[in-house]
Length: 144
Image: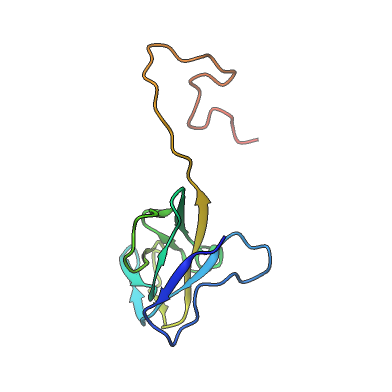
């Protein structure tokens, strides 16, 4: 799939896969910054793109930042609709209770996954077909 992208900051590389076969592109910060414990920051990524209709972009956390520093995304996954043409930004949050997280221009801060989004039509009904799971949710499958 080809997606048009325009770099607002031409000194930084465009989003890219870290390894062949990866599912998501790495997103980089265009600025230096810090996020104190339990605070959040909107971080610019320096590009705009045109996601095709029938698809969306999901902005997801980087596992290494989550594991090592407690960095996540407030609205994970962040959603980029196909009609959006503004700059891609990430709402990072620092969930570490003690350490301020420092990031620099060019650091990989999140990932972008492009997914198909089929158009659906809801059908209003008074009765849903039964399923083996039924209404069991929120931990009903146990932990083992």
